[in-house]
Image (cartoon, rainbow, N blue to C red; front, side):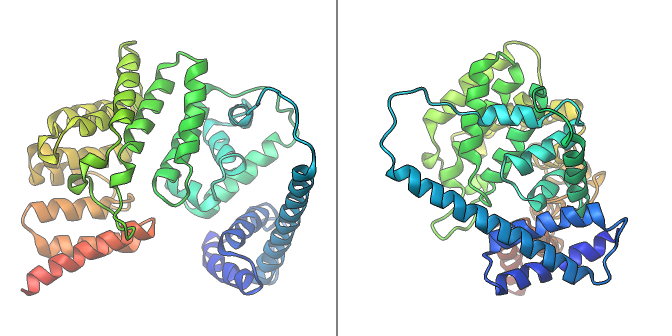
Length: 381
């Protein structure tokens, strides 16, 4: 299986489907389904013309989806014409679907990937980005998960930890602005918190509330990003922040610290600061130390380097950054920021430009491009 070839063909196949009349999102989903099929079929029966094969399969997937959507709309019209139903109890089984997709026969990583794709509404590309793996690798993982559960009954729910991981990733994708899923993730996490006393459920809910409270200040009217230090804190939702802090304090009082509680503690310290200058970076570093101890996550180490740079100076931040893999997402952006604070605008401008090319979304890319342009203009002046 040539993963490089698959990745190279994706934009071409999407373009062909769009020229045939498919919208971008529908074309992207159809191509993702075709990639999963390619991963399943090609090792035993490689096509003579990979591009033609992908186009044909993706186009069939698109037509199937379009027909299903048309049928759904027809059913909705028929339902609209029916008399209103009598009083009854509203049932929302979305959370139950999350638990059922987190099947015990799957590894936690496979269960999360399958649930994100089947129930969470994320594309294979978005899931791969969250896991820091190539898109073709994630397509294979999802395909294997589907094969694993194809012959089992979905009557054994998975564990809370797996469902929490799914909800966390769904919220992060929604919070990025690419897909508006953050509100749905909060709703489902509230439901889960109402059913269990699990401290990490409370920790995740607190984390979501504290981050979501700052969302109105994260972008300008033109859609451009506003860094945390520059945000208008009067736009933050203080009621949501207070709720998040209360939920977090209740969870921490149980004295069973987990990664979501540690992340929420960092978010609470940011929310507690009236100005960027009043942020308690020393405590934030201490919480990142706990998070690294709990998870060993390279992303946590990257964020810790930023906090160290604020608490102990940019040289200390660069030293903390030195041991991390430079291919880690947003590594170049962090390095650029620390080099700029350390008085090295030449290196910072170069790194901002590199980070812009690797940015996962358009607002972030535009922000980093402007940072590079600003420093280059200052250097020319």
